[in-house]
Image 1: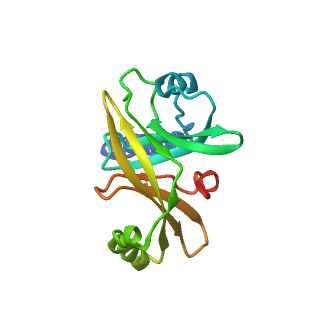
Image 2 (image 1 turned 30 degrees about the horizontal axis):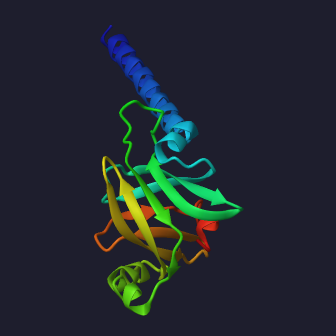
Length: 188
């Protein structure tokens, strides 16, 4: 009788363990293949006042109010006039931030401007990433008021020759466009 109780208990534990494992696999699958959250384009257009927007892709913010961001190009005559970065949940969730960054097209960075980020370039070098400050961009951060900023575009290439860009300020605000956003911003 005792053997049957022990075997029954082990079978129940085995069924519970199997169920928990299957549940974790299903949860991991749904997280990994979850659809990319994209802000409502009409909401972005009404917020920024720009009509000719093209989505670039996700952006990760560091030292920003919101870290999950999304980038758009403001295109005029097939040329990128500016880049707008908004909260990825704008128009999707009611409590999304209305603040956004607008980065104007830039000019080549001088040696003095590039030297401000020598520590960052050296740090990326130790990670076997080639990095170079290539341009300077006037920008503005718009919330209830406008705050002028200067972003520096940094080009990065890894050992597998993947290329991407990010924008950074001297204060450490960083907008990382990953590999998806690189091509549209290559000559911006």
